Length: 216
Image 1 (cartoon, one colour):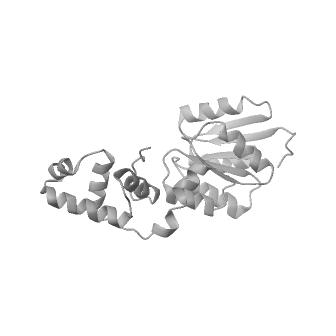
Image 2 (image 1 turned 180 degrees about the vertical axis):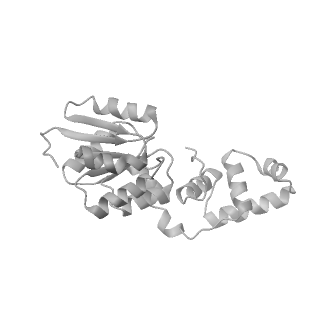
Image 3 (image 1 turned 90 degrees about the vertical axis):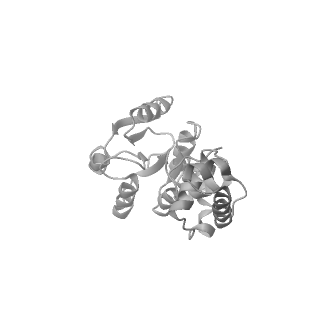
């Protein structure tokens, strides 16, 4: 890796045009960083990394062709010299935990302030590792709850809870009596050890039990 005073080359692996343009714009604010290019297909990423030999790879998890996690795993197995910054806007807690376990040099969420990119790169250039507080919030509850399994009905009710529906509305939606909907909800909350619908939704999302985005 270059010393903090030297130019730092970066390759962006991101299939979303707006996101890649945003990353280029952010990095362009600092003359130290040189963006070598953008790769929008996971299937071509490793070949481009080998060809361009960047100092840092900013790698999205969700890519066509090959996932960011698969690319990260291959880079670490090969002992590639690149520092890898993993980011995602849709990953659940299990995905983030997997990225950490595979040895990502930094892991952040796309919904965090863009300035965190500079923080992560600075930490990596100094030989450290940055796992953002937001990512840690997604990951930390997992170890004690990872054996939770939801039935198809519980997943359905959880999704409706996340939409803000009341017990009566849920009952009408799934075609059951109100007391049955209440019982399903009580069982779900007890299983997730949650005290509110928002908390239940967040826990399920962290564990990868649902693809929905958690409400604030």
